[in-house]
Amino acid sequence: MLHRANRKDNGEEVIGSLVKSGDCNWFIFPRGSALQKTRCESSEYVATFYEIIPESLAMETTVLDKNKKMIFGSILVEGKMSEGGDTVRGKVCGFDVTETAKVCFIDGAFYPLHEGEFYWSDIEIINPNPAEQVPDGAGADC
Image (cartoon, rainbow, N blue to C red; front, side):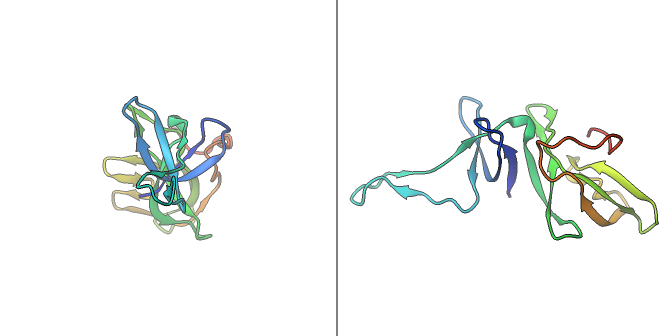
């Protein structure tokens, strides 16, 4: 499962595997990174991890928007919903009504992508970077 967040050192977005250290810091091991040996004759390896801003954390939904971009949803982090989920726009139940909402992981499913019997179509991400601000009136908090 991929996660996305902003790096603590420079605010840049990073996507990869989530790791929580024993001292309660959160890190992402970037997608496409590899372990590297410290010396040829050694059995020690090093890896690049980036400490992240927990509030910016989001998890992949496995759903792609109409432009084939992965949609990420906010998740619970230390008892609070993170702010890193994408805001999407789409049609609800095939009607010509276009809704805008923040994607959040609630009760085992990503809302609004899997909201009971309702389904969204023609979905488009309107703010793919967790550091970007949500446009005025675009969906409520999770």
